[in-house]
Image 1 (cartoon, one colour):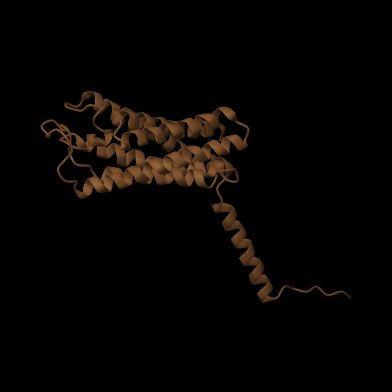
Image 2 (image 1 turned 180 degrees about the vertical axis):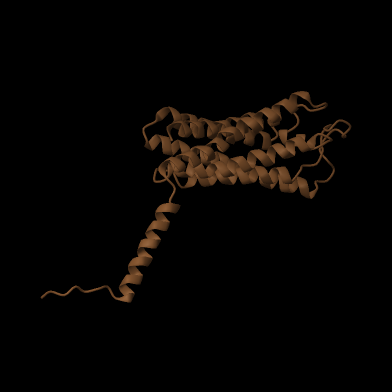
Length: 242
């Protein structure tokens, strides 16, 4: 006569715990559709960050009294009675970039440059946000009524802003070159070339400005906006295929 062996208390408890854990995990695990939606939302933050910053900055540059983009950096717009607009612009665009980098990390995971490109983009966003916190000193006739020429002494805000700007530009240039390698390894020559052009535009524009070249603030603006917009284009393309 055969006997039926019942599970011991320990075995039954283990089985029940395993079943409960499995059910809980199945319930908590995001569905592929939810994951795609979350990734697309993160990428959308990165898509809008650069156009937002560029439009707000250039609109102010064209409208604010005393501002000359060939003599004043766009960062100078953080001064004056309307300075809060540019401060907010830096903070919002920077945070959108930092958050959106998480979406870029998801779609680039496991690919060449998939680790460092998102990290560098996030670092550039954090640098932008910091540039909004630290405001450079008024200089060279802007805001209206400011004496011509550089300030006699630089305050902590100027030093903090320069440090934040250096971090932002360095990270953004590096991100563009890493994206160039990413696309090159994937056999996508057009995006690879565009990535390198964008990084070089910022590298040269910043170098010309730091070297005191004529209209250096304008070349810096062109380079920065070019590199930022390219990152937005990359995010937009990734979002369409997600």
